[in-house]
Length: 85
Image (cartoon, rainbow, N blue to C red; front, top):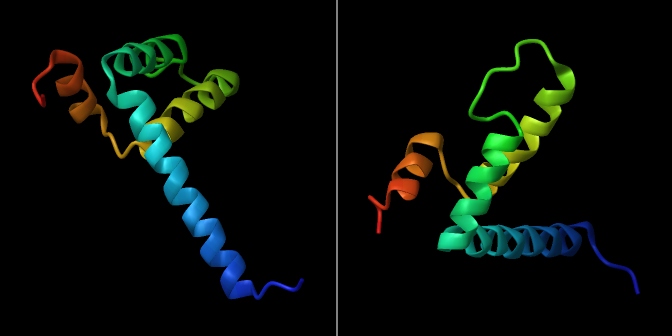
């Protein structure tokens, strides 16, 4: 079966939307918030690492998770404090 480029792009977009929903569900629960905070602490979002490429790579993974959940750091701080509930 031959798929058109358009149908492949539509399927990829659908899968990406589903993945974003999954990330949001995983990290919006109380346990998910604790886990995300741990990842932020463990992988250099909450401290400096000037010039360390390895640590920057770890940090980029946490930034990816935050972007998939559409959370900026100010919003996350409010979530941790329970201000958005």
